Length: 202
Image (cartoon, rainbow, N blue to C red; front, side, top):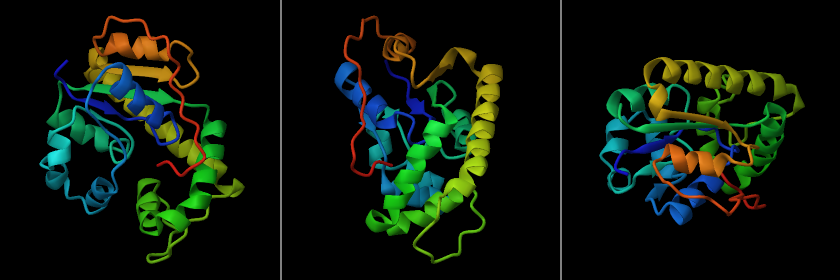
C-alpha cells in the first residue's frame, strides 16, 4: 500500500486505537497527534506541515490537525488519491468524553487551549486566557458542530471520491476487519484494539 491515509475522525473517536491498529496490525508508518503541526495549522502555515520531515516519512495521519474543520478540502485537493477515513461516535458519548478532556487540558497543555477554541469556533474565548470552559450548557453547540461537520464531509467524499472514503461507527464490532479490507489488507483481525486510558489524550 503506497497511498497516504488520513483519519478525519474527531478527537475522542478512537483515534489512538486507530493508530495502534495501523502500526501493530498493518505495519504502517503512523503519525498521531503532534503539537507542532497543530501550532502550524493555527498559524495557517500549511506548507511547513506538508514539507515537514515527519509528514514526508509517514503514511498514515490521525488526530489533529487532520480532522480540523474544512482541512479535508485541502488534503483532498493536494492528495486526491489518498484514503480518507471517518469514524463517528454517539454524539452524547463524544461530548461527555470531550468535556472530561477539556477539564484536564489547561493543566497539561495550556498553550493548546487557543487551538481548541479556533478548531471549534469558540468565539467567546478571550485571547490569552489559558482555559476554555466546556460545560453542560455547551452540549448542544458541540453536538451540532460535530454533526454538521461530519455530514458536510461525508457528502463531499460521497460525491467526489466514494471509493477512497471509509465511514463507520466507533461501536461497530467488525470495524477493524472492514478497515483492513478498505486499506487493501486481506486478513482477519482477531484483536479488538481499544484505548481507554486515563491519561490525557488529544
